[in-house]
Length: 159
Image (cartoon, rainbow, N blue to C red):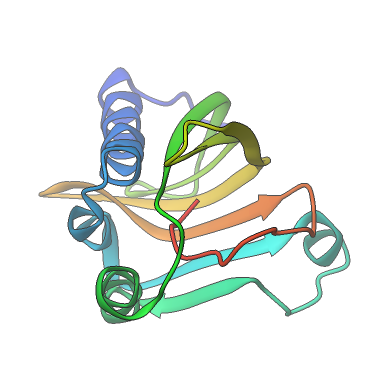
């Protein structure tokens, strides 16, 4: 395993910070730009991931599809207003080649409803493939593996 430079770690940290800020600060229009044009964003359950089953809760295979999710969230879906607060930890980074990296980290999302009620909405693992180019780091893949198969409301906000 190759040592990961401080510069690469910093770029990956920055990418994850911008990801969280886009979601938690309700700036979802910024979210798709964090992904390469051809990408995979998938939310699945631990059960399906461990068994390599294809069923997912959400799956987008291009930046255009991510933009469509944001449009659906803003203009089409009807849902109770809510906000997320992400906490991530335990990031490990492995070099695939000179510009591609595999990352894994744990996450927890606390959901706050408009009435102030808070609950742990989702916990799990992010499995990422990240490319670092001239403009910095982008996700080529983010597979969100949530521990529970239960989702108690419409899943419109990315995890």
